[in-house]
Every structure is written in C-alpha cells, then in structure tokens.
Length: 546
Image (tube, rainbow, N blue to C red; front, side):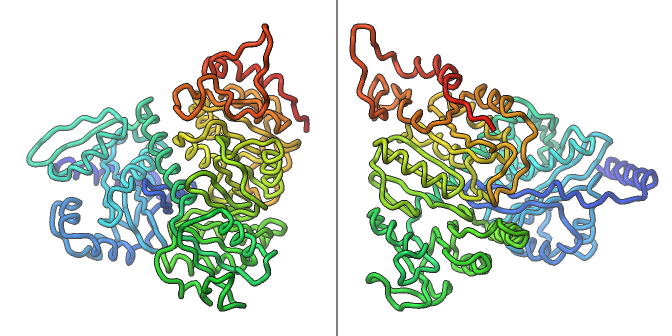
C-alpha cells in the first residue's frame, strides 16, 4: 500500500513538471440530476471555496458514516485535509459535490494511481442515503475519467459497508472483488457496456417517473396570487381545482382578501401551515422568482408557473434561467413557466389548469408545450368525444419536458394511447430512446407544427436542429412514432391492449368511430395490427412542410 502511494506521488510530480498550467474549471461537467425519490439536485466539480461547506457536511455525518469513509472516527477535517480535498486539478484528481441549496449532501472523487487507473470514493449524507446519489456520482465520475484517459476504477471498502459494495456491483460494470487484510478491494473497467447503459437508463426512468408522480399527484396544493377577480389566472386555477372534485388540502395566498369562496387566505407564503406538495405561482415574472425561495422555506416540493413573459426580452430569458437555478437549488421540479397546467380524470381527478372544463374520462394521455397549442389539443379531443386520462402542459419546458411525461406514462396502466404536440425538442437522442422503448406497447402520436425545426416557440431555450425535416421524420419513425398533421389521427388509433384487462381484446375502445361492418371488413388483433401498421400509418399521414 505504501509503495503504491509513493508511486502515485511521483506520478503527480511528473505530471506537474510536464504541464505547469492548471486545467480550467470544467463547466461542462455540471449537471442537474434527478434522484430516486423524485427530487432534484445540482452536481458540479468541487471548488476551493467549498471548504467551509465541506467541513459542515463532514461534521453532520454520523460517527459510523465517517468511519466507513475514512476507516477512522475523524470527527473533523484538518486544514490540510480541507485544502487537499478542495484543491484538485480536474485531471489526475477530480471531485464532485452534490448541492441542495448551499448545502453539500454528497461528495465523490477519484485520484489517479496509474496512468490509466484511478481510486474512487464516495460520501453521501446520512439523510440522503438510498436516493441514488452514489450511483449518480459514479456515473459522472466515470464519464469524467474516460475524458481524462482513465479506463478503470478501484476502491477500498470495509466489509460492513454493504451499501457501497452494492452500489459498485449494481452499476452494470464487470466488478471484481478481493478480500485482503480486512478490506474489500473492488476494481472494474469503466468502459460503457450494454448492461451499464441499461442500468443507467433504468435509473433515469425511475427517477423521472417518480418526479412526475410526485408533481401530478399532490396531497396538498398552494395557490399563490389568487385574487377576488374570477378571471385572474389564480382565480381560474382555483375554479378548475374546485370543479374537478379535488379532495386534498388547498391553501390560498392573497393580499387583497381575507377569505375567498369560503376559504381562508394567508397574506404570506411563510404563514401557510403544514406541508405543501405543489405550489401554483400566478404572479408577474419577477415575483415568481422571488416566491421560489419562500416556497422552499415551507418545504414545497414542486412548482407550477402559468405566467408568460419569460421570453419576450433578454431580461425575461435571464429571469427564466434564474428561476430554474433557484428551483433546482432547492431540489424542486418546475412545470412551466407558461404552463397551461395539468389535469387528470377518474377516481383521483384533479385539474390545475386553464381548461374551461374537465374532459370525459378515457385512455388518452396528452401533452403540449405552448398554452395555445395545449388549449387546441384539449378543445380538439373534446370536440371529437375522446376520453382523456391525463393532460400536461409543459409550457417553456424549462425543467419538466415532454420526455418526463413519457417516462411517467410508460408505467401507467390506464394510458392506452399518447398524443404529443411537439414544438421543440431539447434532447432528440433521449426522446427517441424513450419513444423506441415505449412504442413497443403503446401508440405514440406526434403533431409537429410547421417550422418547428428552425423557429422555436418563445421561451424554448434549446438549439435549433440543422437536420432537414425529412431526416428528423425518419428518426422518429424508426422509433415507432406516428407523425401527423391532423389531430384527428388520435381518434383513429387504439391501444394494443390485450395485456390490459381494462381494454377490449380488439382495441377499439378509444376510437369513437363506429366499428365498420360488411363482409369484407375485419378487426385484427390490436397488438399485431399496431406492430405491423404503425410505420404505414405514419407514411400515410399528411406531412407538414416548413
């Protein structure tokens, strides 16, 4: 062990001699991450200014956790330790911290011990163990290490640290374990494998689906900005919530009334009693940003913002970026801004939306981006008599996007067909990956307005694609997506649901059109028909030319 560490010191000295210029801060390693419990956090490389926060994190840990990490009680980090842990070169020595607010909740690091090998270690806050933080840190450290020419990790773990051993063995990498001198020596190559990629995709799916579950199924709702005017945004959300028959707790924050519609109001967010799952902030853009910190103080977990005006000017776009930064800093998820809201029919009905009324119940799940197109989707389904299970309007999709809705609906047995109005695509690779998996069992119909490739809707802070429309069409079709220029296509598709007891065997349930009759007509089994005809239908659907 001593010889290996001496060799490491000489390796570092040679590296410094060869290149005296320290690498710049790798800002591209920063990331907002979704955790297993549905919350969010911010991951970034460690900085020298993190010394005080790192010391606080270390002292908050239990004696047992400190012992598992350092093999000694170590109640406090020395000044020398703090300097060594926070001053890294982002090449041979890399460290990441995970932040909730200004508080460090996890640390992960690697130290190069050989030209192509590094030793890795983690420390996760006692209060956040079991949320997947160690797995996320390992994924990001592996990506950074590959970028720096490292292809394998090693770790020394005490035998009683079963949680950390489990993190390594469940990564999908081929892990070797050797017990030596009271320590478990773990080693593995970090090159991506089919299994490791599948593990990462599954972890991502669980975390994002849970975040949506938490956002769309609140047990308590806080409406901020409700006024006595029934036509105000806050008033319309309150009307929709009451009309839907929502049975959870409702809190109102209003400055111009002590009581609204028989409900007590609160003058300030900080006065609201009890836990709050979801806050609807119907204020001007500047006030929305300020309200985020107030919501965090009372433990709000998700936020819905219908307010427009975050995109018309450079100042508005800066406000939107600041809004997202504050939301993620506090581990919240954001629907909006500019969101039309969401609704759900059935036994757990709820409407926190600007929709004038609830649609009829049914198996269709809908998602839109801009409020205008979202309103069109709901009006179109209502006019055609389609039954809707759930609708989500992501607005500017500054945080929650259409990808998150797909992750959520993939596990929902009540969803028979999914319809999306796609105006912009922030992560086409991820969208097609999710769609390819989802369309094996559920039809996915996409309406793309003209010019959506080169002209982004206001507030959509993504790059415009350089691909011609036909190329993107082919990418989507290869994932099993049905594209259309007319929303009537949704009424002609049915769920391939022979595996779901709530649908009929031939899958005609969600189609209001009468079943055709005659000696030359037949209804094939739905799953077989879906698999064989999804691309055919896509090719026959009208194309929208920019």
